[in-house]
Amino acid sequence: MQLFGRLLEGDMDILMGYEKVPVEITDAAFIATGANKQQQIAVVSDPGNGILGMAFMLTEEELLSADKYEPLGYKRILVTLQSGIQAWIYVQG
Image 1 (cartoon, rainbow, N blue to C red):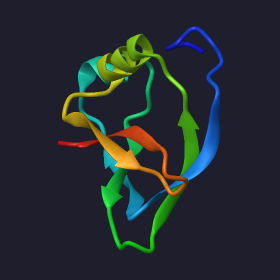
Image 2 (image 1 turned 120 degrees about the vertical axis):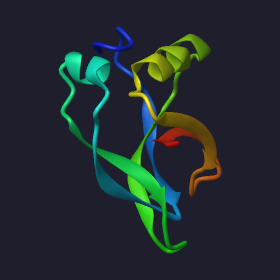
Image 3 (image 1 turned 180 degrees about the horizontal axis):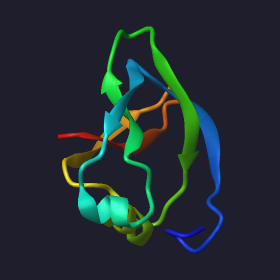
């Protein structure tokens, strides 16, 4: 609600071949938003691993807002979820 100004719609899906690992954010501007320094990030893993999560439907404008929100050192990449849907995720890079 705070970032997009609306309740997002989405569906549960799985990102196969990735796992979540903890990371400490050092970007002062990101931390100033009230975000926790300790976050989780998706990293390439064994093909049998997967991350269960929500795939949200965003407009192009909302996606650009998400890009601005992410801390320094993150990039957006396109992946294919277990359902076959393509989705953007943020990874270190």
